[in-house]
Length: 309
Image (cartoon, rainbow, N blue to C red; front, side, top):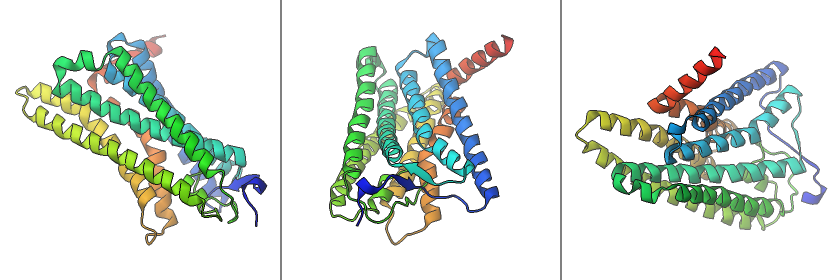
């Protein structure tokens, strides 16, 4: 019986056996990765360069873009490298690093999405209190709490997962080191401790999701009462993209984590994992920029300035 101390590397899921399909997977992930880098990079540049966007909403959007860049950079480059070089291996320390950074960025991102719903709630439902409730100090504290909670959860889960004895081989049935897949390699009942931590995390995320839903219920009720059609359009243009992002993030993540064991499909597991780990960082910039006129105008200014130079 081997344990984690005797495992020097893990074997990640291979997307395809033929060289042509491996290269196709590499090209597909490369396109998604470059789109995420470009989109989030443009958002970061626009918010940093335009003082008109130095508001709480765009401050949290800047944090979201940073987390998206970190999240997709944690998983996709290694998957691309494995496809390009026709290998499945990832070192033990590399796997632990993937678990830590992915869990850290995942929890921090969902915390930021929760804070963004609170920001929209205050801006639309309590506009007279917006300055006092979401001042610069309060925004910095909330962002720090989001990042800090992500670090804390990541440390707990990484330490708990990699302290388990592993005796079911070293093949991880996913394209990156995902905690549920690593737990399947455990040969000890100690994995129940990590299951408990994961369950607690699910309830935390569920609580945040309920908060987001309730916030948007109040927001939409207030928006529908607005006499101005322009006001309603502006409110919906800032809220609907955020609601779509949260829904995609939560539904795919919950399905991947809480899917009944009777529904066993490696392809379905892969699709759900891609939906919550790869797609959001790539589509978030597009979703937020398409329906946000201020951000679109700033991006056009940045692009025209770059082309003129």
